[in-house]
Length: 94
Image (cartoon, rainbow, N blue to C red; front, side, top):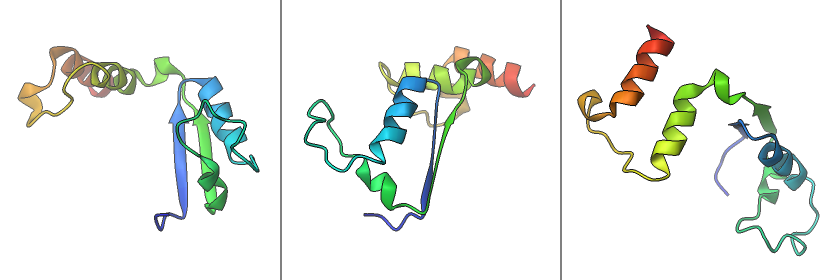
């Protein structure tokens, strides 16, 4: 385990966040054969903050998640970022 003292988990999917909350309290993972990873380590941390963020409140992160799922997400500088990304940044931060 890493030497982390806590973690912040934010997302726009309430079902996934609830799953993370429930995972902290599971005594055994034998019934979770659908899970690829054991999240019970969350219970060992001093602080775990799980927070729902509406998708509409975080458009840039939503774009990055969608873009990264099917494209190369490595940009060497701002000029190689997609136009849509820069438009969202401009709209969000002026």
